[in-house]
Amino acid sequence: MGLTILSNFQHQVLELFKKSPLNGLKVESLFDLAVNKVQTIASQPRARDFIDLYLVLQTQKDWSLEKLRQKAREKFEMFSGPIQLGQNLLQVKQLQDFPVMLKEIDLPSMQKFFLNEARKLKEKVLK
Image (cartoon, rainbow, N blue to C red):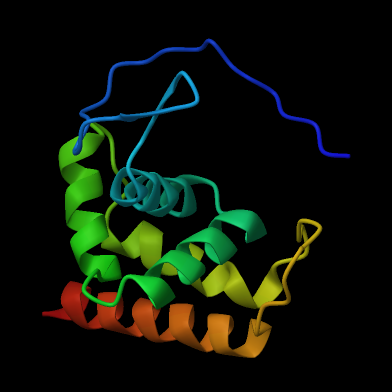
């Protein structure tokens, strides 16, 4: 049996897409959630954020980490730059705080994906 915790904490951030009603709650768009995951990985990476973002980007082929990173800069006043994000993406190799998974994930493919994204950021920084 899962436990759901509802927080009433509010903070002002730009809403990229209007929230949609779902069972009486206002729910952020998948795009906004993906942008939030990029921000979280840039500041405090956790296994669940890598997994969530990886799964979203596997299903939303027209989205890219770069596009989400740019939108995170718009949405959040204080966003870590490409160097910090790149360093944190490299942490995908040392993840240990995995959530209980209902569906298996191909960990080597996920790691390869984020390591490749870190390389792309390296090229951006060195230009």
